[in-house]
Amino acid sequence: MIYKNTAVYNAGTNENLFGASAKVTAAVTEALVTLNSYPEPDATPLREALAQKLSVRSTQIIVGSGSGELISLLVQAYCYPFHESAILSVRPTFPLYQMEARDFGVRYEAISLDSSYNIQVDDLLYAVNDSTRLCFISNPNNPTGSCLSVADLKRLIQELPAHVTLVLDEAYIEYASSPDFGSALPFLQERDNLVVLRTFSKVYGLASLRVGYMVAQEATIDKVKQLKQPFNVNHLAQIAAATALQDEDFLQYTLQETATGKAHLQSVLDKLGIQYWPSEGNFLYVDAGLPARPLCQQLQQQGVLVRLGEDSFSLRITIGTKKHQDYLHHILKTMLTPSH
Ligand code: PMP
Image 1 (cartoon, rainbow, N blue to C red):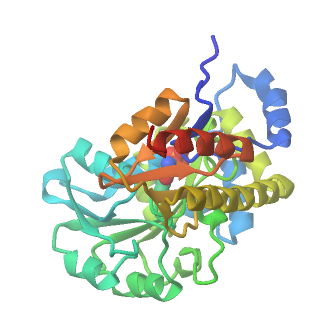
Image 2 (tube, protein in one colour):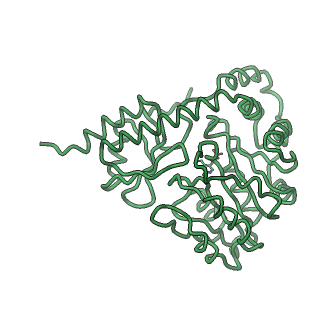
Image 3 (cartoon, helix red, strand yellow):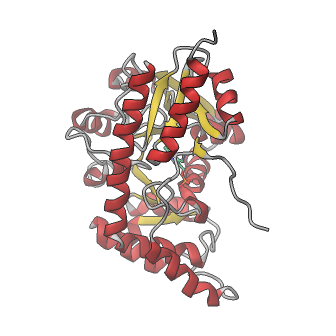
């Protein structure tokens, strides 16, 4: 039996709605003959390909079953004893940080983003206390699409107290086009406990296969590696990710389609008088102007899944094709037009 999401437009999970690389599909199909074998325990060929691309050593990389697994392993590696530790982040952001904290009995503290959804670095630094072990920053931030300026990123890396491991979650980095956006990768040598997380679930369109990775200095990698299951990423996923890295054409195609789709969704929202914020991701954070939960339910009945935001008026919508978004336009127009 094949499980397939039957939504007309799944705008709720920030997947790549433009598909996956045909080269990846071919490589995975070819690799099907290996189903009886265990995978490479530490995904060494994939780590080597990543190391070459990122200009780091392969010993600075660990591959996980999605970056979600690595978030969980970081909590387990750094928040010990759990009940005496705290995780710091911002609000709103990716909910998994809080969920993992809750699952392990770790305190979760989040500072609010400002009214433009930017991080006030002073507020974050002020919120650090003796129990803070990890600080998770999604950059660009899910769900708001906002990002740290390069100056703020540098300041955080330099000024966050040394007892806190700083995790920059760059799940959406490939989509970011702001000239004032930068990865934390070039700063890995400047701070002992700096971690960069990335994933193949977004721009590479491989959410189903569960592959993410973490880049850090070797001491951090070794600490997390001790907790990792040996065969945590299956062979097909490793082959898919390594192939996806080489398919620059598909990457460029996705970025182009996403940029075109984003401009189109913005024009749809403009026509409907719905406010949205600038976004560096493959999604828009929207103020629906009316209670979001019932709107979300109505959209779901029409086959469109969107993600509820943090406050009662906010929604997050993943960029889709023109056809997806024209359909969303059509049903929103009907819903928002007062009946006579
Ligand atoms: N980080 C962020 C900011 C995300 O939005 C997501 C997925 N929505 C993830 C990490 C996890 O991605 P995955 O586990 O699929 O690699």
